[in-house]
Figure (tube, rainbow, N blue to C red):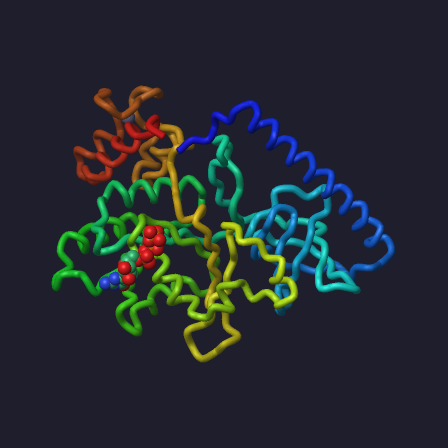
Length: 346
Ligand SMILES: Nc1nc2c(ncn2[C@@H]2O[C@H](COP(=O)(O)OP(=O)(O)OP(=O)(O)O)[C@@H](O)[C@H]2O)c(=O)[nH]1
Ligand SMILES: [Zn+2]
């Protein structure tokens, strides 16, 4: 539902709250400035944001150890979970201050209530699109997720869960998966019903930062519960002290996954999760971006006879010709058309 049409009074109240926040941040920042000048903070070190609550962040030190609650210098805006930062630990307390943000390899954005794209997480290596034997996926749904993932520039991976429910020969689902594998997408199968049911997924997660997306009921929570069995890990490995003030927000959190093997020190990979990340919309994409989200279209785009070809019935359309030849699967092309039709609906 859209919350874009805020009443004037609501707007005024929001502006007032924001102004008060900014004033508080300014006061805190001038205190930080004094403390920094007075040498009350240790040397600069690297870290990664594992959660954020407004201007307060939890930062995991690069060299390991518990996360530290930090605040931001006023000149730093828009930090998100997954960001790499430079920070300094306070000498006299169990907190710190973030002084700089590192370059981002990637950023995941979502529309805010006003419809503006806002970053929600950074430095993600792969988007795991979870679907399941039940509820059976519609090819169009997988394509929608793939197009949205392609638009972020982050590599998508397809995860078929609940393979314990798969009929003997795999049926239509196997054919569907083969189609996506032929397009170059990695496909991983999982089940939470068997001890080794997650090993292919764990291998895929190792050494990377991932997010899970997918329709309701496909088993995202079940998978994540199995990957992070330890409640302590889920809370984010904060020290008891800094956990006290933790707000119960729906902020994105970064979790270090335990290595399923015997070597506890090796990286099992990292996971960034929040309800806002799991839901995935296409509303902000235009026609060109949707077309580019179909990997097999890319080399053909720009080769239609008419420069403004919309790939409907135009003569000399490179996409339609590729469908004719069998180079583009008709169901993928139908998906493309259906996504275009749905663009204006949200
Ligand atoms: N048979 C079978 N059932 C599973 C498997 N994984 C999850 N389920 C069941 O599927 C149902 C939905 O799982 P959830 O983990 O809640 O799904 P979700 O994707 O997190 O759903 P939302 O929270 O609505 O987004 C639950 O009843 C799970 O027990 C599996 O591998 N095999
Ligand atoms: Zn065309």
